[in-house]
Length: 116
Image 1 (tube, rainbow, N blue to C red):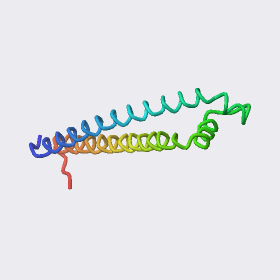
Image 2 (image 1 turned 90 degrees about the horizontal axis):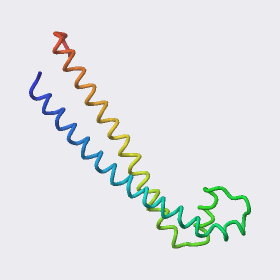
Image 3 (image 1 turned 180 degrees about the vertical axis):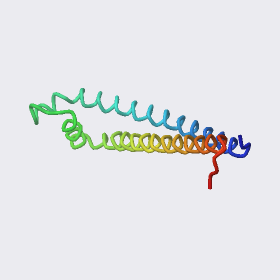
Image 4 (image 1 turned 90 degrees about the vertical axis):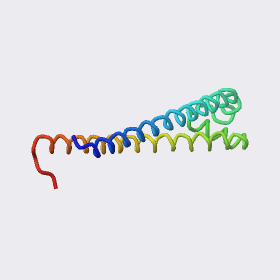
């Protein structure tokens, strides 16, 4: 096994772990904010249903945004954290693909094949 390649793979794996930790933190923040949103919707459901009797969750959130402008910051923070963890998820997947590719190349070369 090529020592340099092994070190590169180790660095990629370490970076993937760092991204995974960031993912966990962003996912936790998004989860906490979503809980806060759901509690606010529930607390205001009577007023919301007073305006629209048969309301779905998404519409209730939109109505709450209109009814309570201070709620916009919570909602904005939730959406930002959600976008962050989804982006981190894609980066982690890309790192895993790169690691798998490098491992396949190492195996290919280790089996005596030439790689250019």
